[in-house]
Image (cartoon, rainbow, N blue to C red):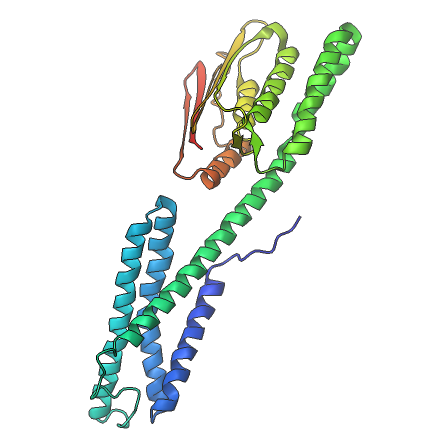
Length: 342
């Protein structure tokens, strides 16, 4: 799966300003007596307008998009459009003065300010508004392309890591062993594991699933792990859901639960535990996971692993500014708490 996307904003922004330069130049050229005068005017105007419009679209617009500050941005948009309009008029007056001073041939129609109409500011202001609308629209499009690229990349990573070879090998190996000792338990494990594979196959690439579907998937995963580890682990879970049909992104929570089973203490000498609490109240989701750590291992859990890194990136895309993820680690306990405003 390959998606061709814009990799560098400059490849779009720079040609845009080159186009603006030629538009100004071709507009001025027929109305002046010196080609160098038209070139200089167009260059100075673009060099002045460019940083103003780029700051509006590249900084203020992005900030407004992230913080949803539409009203403030509309005020900023109006102010910068006026600023561009005043810059336009200032350069017209400057070149009128340069012509009268003999720097350029006088008599140009474009820079004649001796008989300005009351509505003379309307054209420069309109130019400022049009330029700002265009550059902001272009920037919005580029940000949309970026977000789509990240979503596609995450989808690819999700498909690649849905069933880790390590987890698959361990489950199948455990089923093989149980077939020789406890056929009924092996059958239960195989059924639960098939449900996990079925969910990942049919729902893993969907953008949205219901809470009921995703929670059942988590329960199946937990059931498989409980069968695998038997009395070496004590697993407790609580699920309090007000709206089971509420939709959420698929496979959003599995990484945290998988991480708990991966790092929990489990041995003949040290019984580990995992406590999972999942709640949905209104538009708020809260997942709390606590697991014991082995006291025989001095290693700290890698909170920057690929799985956690991917889910953090995904949360940034899907719930920017609307979620809180805290991870705490002590010598004996590892805690994860995720709150999402959906």
